[in-house]
Image (cartoon, rainbow, N blue to C red; front, side, top):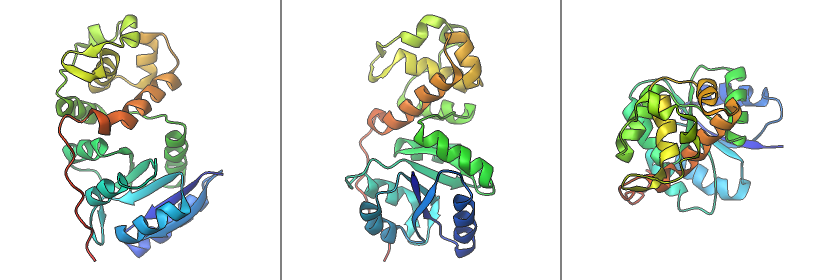
Length: 223
């Protein structure tokens, strides 16, 4: 049975999230913490399948934790609780390895869907977030009519000078940026919606490698 580790700054939020997670079918609680330093100590021992964390922890912003996680021998998907706000910040976090965002008041049903989608590597992106990711990757947004052509789904050649981003990935982000839903992209590309969601998941998994600028050194979390 897959397990998740909870990292929440507020005791009230942590208690609520524990109850919601225990209400998710097929999932168990691997552990929990309120400080990033404690999580970094426990995660290699507990080996959870997924980490759910707050944007702001008691000992610093979650960016510090994400950078430190890259130093551990873990391939750990990360979901963040968000109260909405700056899409630009969320795009930066995805370049650091975040796979998805979950509204803070989502409830058990939404948490179940997010957990299952993450382990199945199925994701979607909002138009704003897709546009932000294109901008950070230095890739222009393709016209919807061009990106929706069925042959774009198999365009594995590099997108211009971006040797790490394929034309198909650029077209996928472009369609999402234009507001297309995974099912609509599937109709254009003649594939199942699930396959489109998995392509988005694969792209999110590769984002840290696609980022054009080197990642900063990981600062220490506050004691």
